[in-house]
Length: 96
Image 1 (cartoon, rainbow, N blue to C red):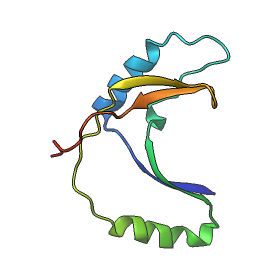
Image 2 (image 1 turned 60 degrees about the horizontal axis):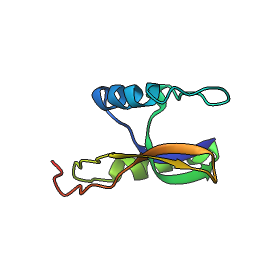
Image 3 (image 1 turned 120 degrees about the vertical axis):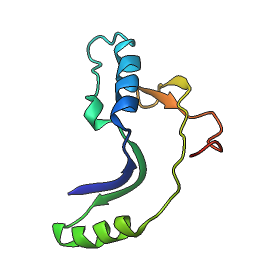
Image 4 (image 1 turned 180 degrees about the horizontal axis):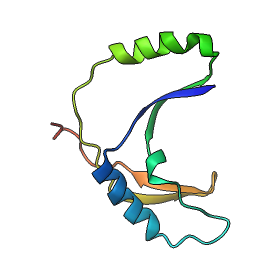
């Protein structure tokens, strides 16, 4: 299975992101990603045997980090991958 460590937005943030996505008015071949799949990948682990899953869960479960604000304040298009996304350009020092 392919695994990664990621941040998942709460329901309110995912709803707000979905509104932005809907406003893009994409036409074929573009498509919207379901809001339940929104995330920010922190580390891509790659293909992992199921037998290693318990170790990765232990590693992930042992990590601690303070809460942070991640302002996504710019919408960008990346031609090289024909994708667009929100960019974090603000200061997250106001974390809570």
